[in-house]
Length: 343
Image 1 (cartoon, one colour):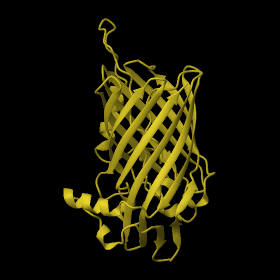
Image 2 (cartoon, rainbow, N blue to C red):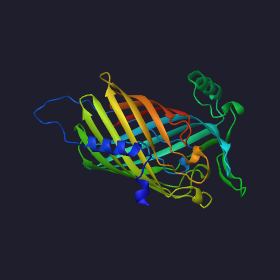
Image 3 (cartoon, rainbow, N blue to C red):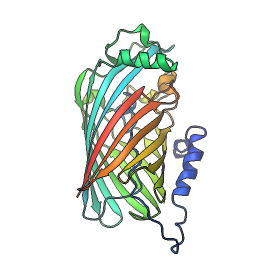
Image 4 (cartoon, rainbow, N blue to C red):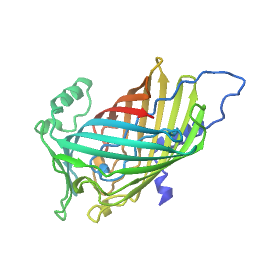
């Protein structure tokens, strides 16, 4: 089963694995003095598909840790437009909504080589207002519209039903719900803050304590290896890992037990306090047997954004995520803003 988890989408895993190796390559010779800017990436993106969000969806993380005895708090808010709608031969699938997801993550440095953290979040779901804009945008760039024009703008629906047994496998009502909290423990394998390279191993777990409608009701586990390689004002970030999924009895036969995850990001400092970041993140499918690419396909996102720092220990990120390819589980787009403070 674990071997399956590490077989990521074709072409994506080899690139990511290579990038992790590069990230921990030997540092430049000590005799060569070179100023290295502080890395501000990667962009802390996460998969937003409503079915995936019932389970553990790891946030892309860096290879650096909070210093011993210090702690950091990150406030994030992400707005997504989601449209996955259609009937497969076996299921009726309707994900038609807009979602505002907010989260607070607290991290604490436990000695020189360990970090612990906990993330709390909420999500608010409704029909939204961006449907007309998205259709015009798709038309302007000649992109597929996924039959959006056949559905009334601003409509709401989040459910999966089995057309053979008439069972309702999933339903999320509109309104605000509490997400399952996620705890993590991170170990510094190699490198330190300010070093040309770093490597960290992260264990995370989803605790089934959130609202029933937006939770699988089971605990999930994840393991992730993150690497960084820095050259002056350019930083390469990469990660690869796996998630162990525990589905409810209703969804068990439609969900895989293990899924792979990976990310690759290139960061370039463009001013003294701002960096531009280009990132791709995805992995293997969480779902199977729905006979629909929107759920059974490969989840992958292209994320573009800016990251910066301001005096007083504050850092920020602003990013835009778009699903690639357009037919897959990843949602149409997400605007994400994050603000962090270190003490």
